Length: 65
Image (cartoon, helix red, strand yellow):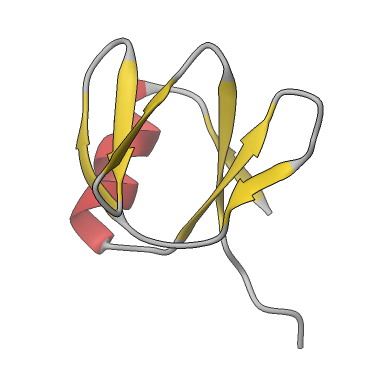
């Protein structure tokens, strides 16, 4: 799984509409689903909900094969 940390990584994920997993910094999964609708230097909006970038990790979903 690839972590999205920088603005360019978030921008690329938003353009390609990949599915994002949202996790707390301790690793607990908060939400498994959706593409990035919008991001700012402080928040990321996925599936209608905004998440604070400093409190969550954003990971590209890649199904196991």
